[in-house]
Image 1: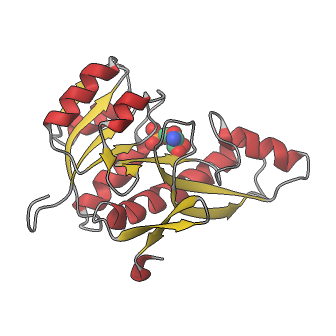
Image 2: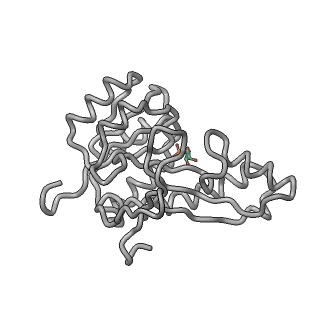
Length: 213
Ligand code: GRF
């Protein structure tokens, strides 16, 4: 990143693109300092592509991860931002974005309080536990991506109550509202590298600089 330049990101998404919109809105509102170089989808029919084009952004459809990796490497990105990207990234792809501090410069948002409910349908899993009387809260996690499924270093988490949710849709509606706030807010300090990676025992942790924690 050059002096005074905004961090450059690419957004990878497979579907609806509401998190993409939240990020693009935050950039327009100057709440998030970033420049979106391209929005890439693995699915030509995904709504996110229309939404990105409507904002005058570059878009690309690419299913092949090797090709996607070379395209992204040419863009000299600061970070890669996943927003509902439904493919598992290969270890080779991830290592192309590795940072000397011990993580990959790829960020993802996941709709649960990881390590609870990794993988697909996390809102549904939370609602099922709620129906069994075992859960009254769930949450959202923003994390760095590693080669596992939703196992990378956690940047930020935010909880919300689901005690008065009567359907999965209720949980999702509430969760998405949290996602749309938490993702741009977290990206603002992650993209500026305003954090330390600290070691607690054998484990690494992301420690935001004090003004962001
Ligand atoms: C969100 O729930 C996100 O947490 C998950 O996939 C969904 C994407 O939604 N990773 P959208 O495409 O951003 O609307």
